[in-house]
Image (cartoon, rainbow, N blue to C red; front, side, top):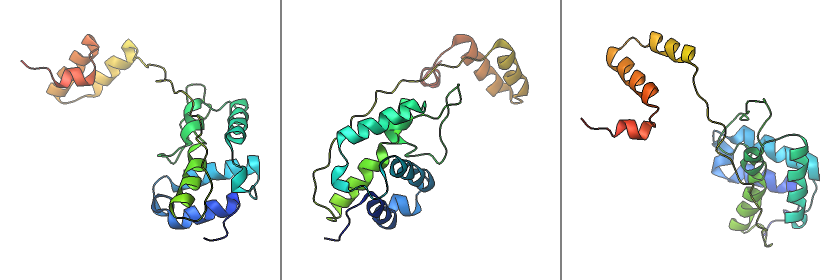
Length: 171
């Protein structure tokens, strides 16, 4: 086993050896979020001191910064930019994901031999539904040049049917 003992060393190793972190599309966002944890807990934090209690206090810290729960859980696991809600505040789900990824990757590669705590994820809402205004709907219809597509969009808008329901309709 190598002598990986700190958060910074764990992130460096994971960045160099985990395929998704080496070349993946979300690489930059994950590294930013790993750095956020380092700023909170310190880059030289021993891996053995990463506990549920520490991560919970990190989540409270993120809540104080008004991050949404979805960002706390994942902290942009699959996106390069932070999702922002209507109030323009970053979401919070993504901040926990890099922590568990680093620890799990180190254990899988047999670089460390410590028990990995299970981190509680926040319950995520489905978000707020968004409805077009009549003017927006009319604008959409005005910009659709294909007659059949215009008819389909008009039908969908007037029936308020879900796309899955609309695509499975038969005549």
